Amino acid sequence: MSLRQAVDRSRAYLCLECGICTGSCPVSRFHSAYSPRLTVEKALLFDEEESLRDAEMWACLTCGTCDIRCPSTVDFTGFMRSLRERARQIGQEGVCTHAETIEAVIELQTSAHYRRSTSWMASGKTVGKAKYYYFAGCLPFLDVIFDDIGFEGRRIGTSVIRILNRIGITPAVSEGEVCCGHDAYWTGQTELVETLATTNIRAIRKTGAKKVIFSCPECYYMFKHVYPEIVGDLGFQPVHIFDVLVPHLDSFKFKPVKAKVTYQDPCRLARIEGVIDEPRRALRALPEIDFVEMQRIGKDAVCCASSNWISCSRVNKQIQLDRLEEAISTGARTMVTACPKCNIHLRCAARDDECKIKIDIVDIFVLLADHLGGGKRGT
Amino acid sequence: MENAARDGFSLSPGTSVIPVRCSGLIKVSFLLKLFAKGTEGVLVLGCLEQDCRYFNGSTRCGQIVDETRKILELAGIDAAKLGFHLISESQGKEFKKILGRFAKRVGKKRRRRVSASSSR
Ligand code: SF4
Ligand code: SF4
Image 1: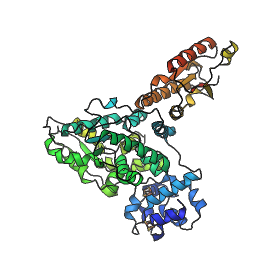
Image 2: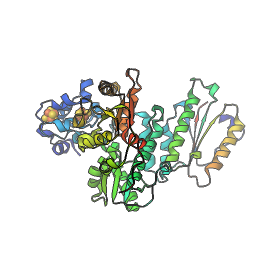
Image 3: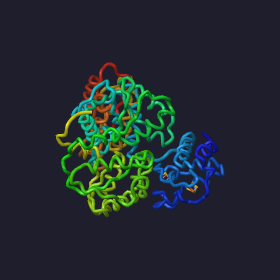
Image 4: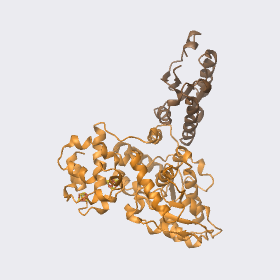
């Protein structure tokens, strides 16, 4: 896609130069050289070379805050994505974090002898064919990679399965499942996304599932918005676990949680999907919980400040420490989130020497599953 | 490896050597990408821990291999296809044995084997 097409498609030509995007951007706040407004202005000069070589383009978190605040409805993240796609064609790319481990895991998943293990899910009930499918995504791999910071990805997956089992759903899982391609999508790797999407669709269709359940907001986003653009009709409906879970909350009879907790809204789930009330209802269903809100919540929540496994710098750490401080100032010492990535990135920052007061980062499905009481089973 | 070569040892066809300055420099991504490209087995060879001239290179390499093996298992690839041995440069015979045993373990269906080793 040329720069002109990127401008046209994202409506960047409507830019009023108001600067609301830059004023809202978490990156710009700590890194003055980065400005979405300036990126748009530069693009409108149509100097493609200059735009594509701008290293700052890889600093965008694609959090979407600017998108929802722009008075001219400029789709900045869409613009950024097209720009990155084009930049990759001339050999530019972002700096991979974690020594490219995650990139390599994705590459491994596209190789011929890849067959994902499902045995780690054994503590819950799963099958090969069913009406519902559970898409675990990269959870087991992230579990291994971020073991050093105490991230338990597999526990998130098994917690989701336990919750589903309690509702009466025995989901199908598949050895043919691969990464959803979310990060490849936002870093402009179109071909890789297509490969991953078609592989996933093939694997899921084999299970005969009509509804595919997601716990990861990013996987959910991909299946809901991007996959249909690639393959057309999916042949099944992507649903977020909250949609399945919330109607059953009353029947769960949770055990009490004697803690003060706050909730971090994931960008994809809150800002893009508008799933804001559901996680809060789930948390409030836990008896004795002292749930407190941070100042910036819902669509105004601050991104966990690292995305697509690129560009993790001092700036990102500052955004995270600032967010943790906001959480700590509520008096809560537990921050619950519904996204494995928020969990990893904020957990990493919480272990930084500069984070003076200790705060635990806990996954919402782990918290809920660990407090399941002896409630009734049924659909 | 040069010591082993002096004993009349040569690598079997289909095996390639990737020299690295220190086994501690090997990354998980590097090993995974070899498997992604269809390599049947990867044998990582490093110096004995007490011989490391960068302090903890071999120990670090052991951790990297552990992490990679866990990822391979999750991806349905037998972790035994990633071998790991620490040997000293004087152990030419031992080297031969390790390589022989590893080749057997990786099996007949191998297409390409690579041994990554530190260059001492
Ligand atoms: S908020 Fe929208 S109109 Fe304002 S500077 Fe940014 S892109 Fe332009
Ligand atoms: S998407 Fe987020 S990080 Fe990127 S420019 Fe917009 S507000 Fe900044």
